[in-house]
Length: 339
Image (spheres, rainbow, N blue to C red):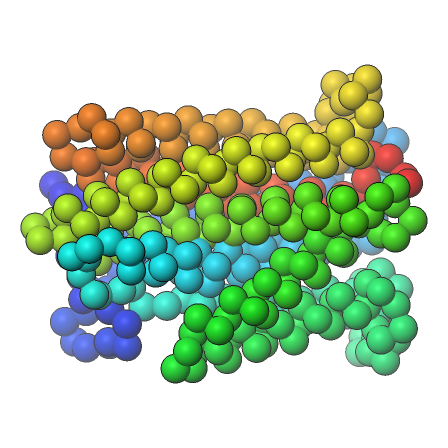
């Protein structure tokens, strides 16, 4: 049985010969999406249990919205990144998977709009539209950043449908910068340092997650036969860049953790605070992802058929999806240290 099947899923095509996802694959995707949604919705109660910390209003819903926002950022960033990589491969097929960026833009817009409505009600969950003070968003730093993300996702979605989808890079960069600034308030010690760390962390994470999704979609499109060699070359090129991205993610993650948790309290806070518990879960998941990535790279270099690396890489995508969900939960939980 082949691991990668050829398909006619090319840009701008929607013909009768295009392969549709099988019922089993559709059910599997639905199950994974449901499980991913349960992590931010049910995770706060588990993380906050017996810590003595109070749950912020609507923490589960906010965590879910942030998960959708992060995923919506990863998809177009990864597509642009891998299209650029594929363009550097001599002899690579010109066929590319159909873009998911317009759908990601719409999902990101709705998630950002939901988060902006929370900011507009004083970081409370609005009971009805009358409670939302949209004009008040212009009067606070957090409100302006929320509006920036709403507009940037809308623009990115429109540009994805234009003749120059590469222009998405600018609104996507604005979203990453807004997230970095939002995560670090001005009263914090050295907020610009924290924002810079978060910007690198978010950017590298989006390139890693979204890039791997699009690489696997490209491999499935190119299939075996004539596309096997370029497919293996693309996966190998991505793997080399991903190693650098993982190093940057690890370094910025450790540095950011030490800024919020003094070294002498890290072990204690990883088990006794909600933020620490979610962070510990994320670290364990990233370790699993790194192991899967190493397995894929080993197969790519040593296996008789390099494309057998597709199997651990696909498992890596699933694990990364869980990491994104935990990251959404992490941003909604109370910080362990108040600056």
